[in-house]
Amino acid sequence: MSTQDSFFAPCLEKLFFGHKLTQQEVRQLMNGMLSAGLSDVRVAAVLTALRLTTATQELVLTSLESFREHLKGFETLQLGSERLVDNSGTGGDQSNTVNISSMAAVVAAASGAKIAKFGSRSISGYCGSADVLEALGVPFARKPEQFQHQLNSFGISYLYAPALLHSLQHLNTVRRSLGFHTILDLLLPLANPAPLHGQVLGVYSEDIQILAARCLHMLGRRRAVVVHSEDGLDEISVCSPTRVIRLTDGLQSVEVWNPQDFGIPLYEIGALKGGGKDENKECFQKTLSGKSSGAVTDAVLLNAAATLWSASIVDNMNDGLQLARSSLVSGRAATMLEKWKDLPN
Image (cartoon, rainbow, N blue to C red; front, side):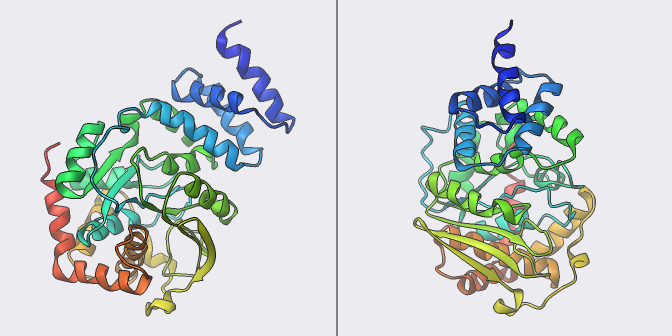
């Protein structure tokens, strides 16, 4: 019997009968997937079995330990910033909206935050963060030293997850074929290897918001915002109220943010719809030029404001909105994007 067989079948049996895995068993399954040691069929079986169980804080944090073991090289980086944040979401909301979080990241960076986005290509939508940034000509950080250079010299970097964790290409193929949410949707944005001060995390379901917030606290985030809108977006929406769990130095609050609370009108969800890489690239450039208005611009401003709050740049959303809007109108955001595109690949 192979090493894989010795732990694979017993772990799957426990999961299918509703029994809890030990921490060692969770690590074995995760390490088997992350090392590309499990076949497609077995990866699909693990992800399906885990979908049938209730995700717990212990399960998520133990799984993240395995991710850290496979994401080496970040422990000794000298990043020199207490304002380092990520605003990547879980994806999987099936909305096919434009790339709001990526645009918000550039606006937040132009407003003084340090951004370490950790992402990949789209699994369920037309165009993910990596897809649109690649179309724009933004260079990805594929090694820890590239990430440190970009962040220290420029203030924003995109950590391309499959380059840092090679098994993701294999795992993403299986995720696409399954067609439903898996634990990897939640794990990937939590697995950002950079030492983050704060995080804005959009999730695909209200059911996992509290779990995500607790995990962010255990991961040491000083400020965090976990969001899911009533219209199903893993973003702060301008088309419906958004349920927010806000984490401030360990204290959690549950809030509901309405666009009108921030002087923003309520839009139809169709106003945020995106398309393929070319359409989203055009929208990205137009929005960051500061010359457009409407649902996309307001959504970017709201999400940039939350990112600035999580970075401790501002103490409330209204100040964040004002600062983000200034970065758009003044041209700082457009300049930030052009300089980012000009960085050596």
